Image 1: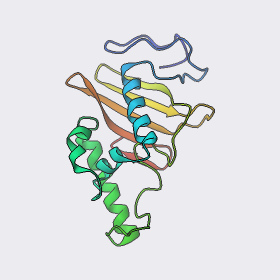
Image 2: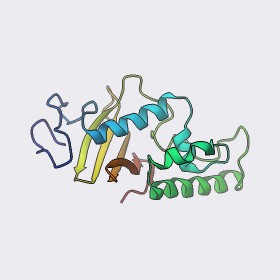
Image 3: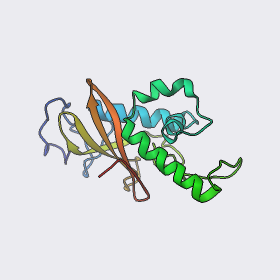
Image 4: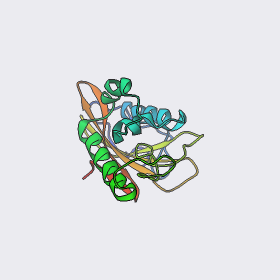
Length: 174
């Protein structure tokens, strides 16, 4: 999506909001933005990084939820996050989790932050197609993009397929 009125609607996408900011960011309105907003809000607001733990493949995750989380993110994204998690644990803690030590990411790889926004999230569509969309995310009142996300539509539903946490981490993104 570009500044208000500059982007035509794409088949399979909702019409962009008319109240977008001057830089094109707005609260979620399309189905892809609403899907990503739900993931970010749940992941940040629960106090438990459960989807992040699933993606990282950490030993303390609730494996009973694996089937549910597999419906939200693609295998490619999970593999990319899990591979980086293993690399960091090997580098920082000799390949073993050490209680009380941060052996891997400094931020949640799903929300691209340690904290979450209490005012919600703003989105801007960077690329849009029938079965793929790339969204930039930032917090209200902050001009910096926090993360860029690629979503793909499979079987009529959106899945998170790539994340770039600007500028420090990138998973399954070109």
